[in-house]
Amino acid sequence: MVYSIEGVHGIMFALGLGITHSLINHGPSIFIGIPDENSPLITLPGKKLVVKGKGSKAFFTTYYGSITGVIITCLSLYPLYLFYNYFLDKISNFQNFMIVIILLYIILSCKNIIAGIITVFLGSLVGLIVFNINSVGTSEAFLPMFAGLFGTPILIKKFNEDFPVQKIDFFFPDKKNIVGGFKGFVAGIFSSVLPGIGPSSTATVLDTEDRLEFMSALGSVNTTNIITSIIIILTSLRSRTGLADFIISNYSTDKIKIFYIISVGFISSGLTFLLSKKIVFMFIFILEKIDENILKITIITCLLFLIIYFTGHTGVSIYFISTGVGLICSRLDAKKSLLMSCIIIPVLIL
Figure 1 (cartoon, rainbow, N blue to C red):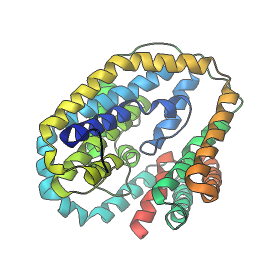
Figure 2 (figure 1 turned 60 degrees about the vertical axis):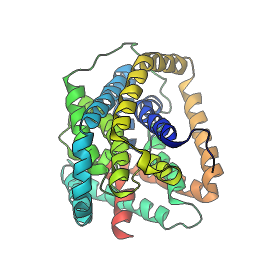
Figure 3 (figure 1 turned 90 degrees about the vertical axis):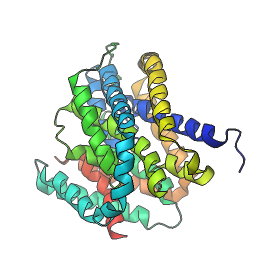
């Protein structure tokens, strides 16, 4: 396959896209309720702030957490390189045990443990169905599964509510963003080495009961996960993200230099910072001009078309099953992160 952008320039271009995407991709999750596969848990707290007219605060809270994650990760790349180089293989020997401990911790931290167990069971059931379907690739099946578990229940629950008027404010980072960003950095290191444990699950384990701090942690863990996946390529040629898989498949890893990664991280962060204010304010302006119910119907319709296009009728079945489970679990007093058992349990069993 021939690319117009080759060698180190292609790698840095792809990395820049990945970092920029991780910095601003939480917008649709927050304002509309469309979950991203890396951080579906941001949908619920984001929508709660949107309902109060604080959508811009939700966006910038997550964004500043992401920026913090980029800065800390880039400054820690050389120690992380040594860490992964010497300990990655040793950690893999205990990864299943660590995954079980994380899952048990999340269950036991629920106010209603029975509800937490039921949520894990239902999420696991959906995951096992998805992982055992041969007619649809597992990665493609994530679209209907995550849309059903995390996105559609929120759209249905808020169906007759209009999009609330938003306070158009620009927020500078505060202590919660920095603390949440650092916790997300720590969580991102674990999520990058534990298969099946997504960024949201590791962020949940940390002490982030404060909603704003948790959102900052979720933003940070995603950017940390993106950058550390490139370091893992250098140490073991293992693919932990779609970006890493793309780079391994199309470029020589000998061209990857830590200094280049640091440079791209800071450049991407700086450029998105200059544009983020205009992007979120324009997004809010457009949403306030559109009827909320029409928008939600359009979103669900577009989701169905995308699911049919990429996954066929099997994907539609997955979507409706996942939506049913998502609606049931939304009634239970359990952490939504437990629905990530749809990935965790199949990874442990299969």
